[in-house]
Image (cartoon, rainbow, N blue to C red; front, top):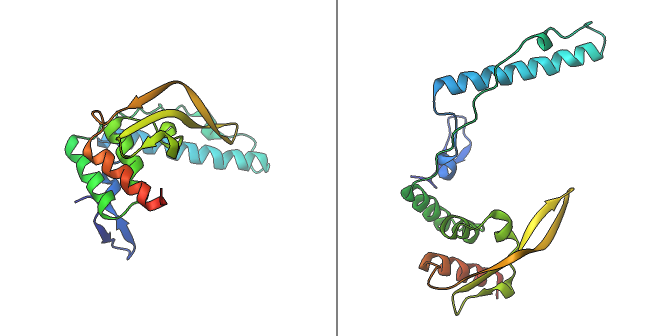
Length: 173
C-alpha cells in the first residue's frame, strides 16, 4: 500500500507513497528515451573533448536520434487519490492540506501557495482564492488573481474542511 516505508535491497529506506508517479509504460518508450539520454550524454562529453582540443569535431553531432514521443500521463484513479491522501494523513505530512486542496478542489499549486489565513474561514467552511504565488525571473511574487474564487462549504468536502482545520491547529490560528 502507498505510504509504507520499506527497506530497499541496498539498506536505504524507501517511501512508497510516490509509486504512482508516471514512468514510461512500455519497453519501446523506455528504449527510445534511454537511447536519447545516452546520445545526449555522449554528445556533451565529446563536445568537451572538442573544446579541450582532444578532438577536431564531434562525431556524435553527426547522428540524428529520434525524439521520444511525449509521455502520455495517466491521471490517478479515485482509489489512487484516496490511498495517497490516506498515506499522507497517516504520516502527518506537513503538505497534506495542500494535497487535499489540489486533488479534491482542483486548485493549482500557485493558488494553494498563495492562500492567506485571512482567505480561509474555518468556522463557515469558506475559502477565497484571491492570490497566487508566481516565480518570475527567479523571484517569488505574491500576486492577486484577476477573479477571486469563493469556495463555500457546500463545495468543500469534509476532508477539505478537516485538512484546513488540521493545518490551522498546526500553525496555531
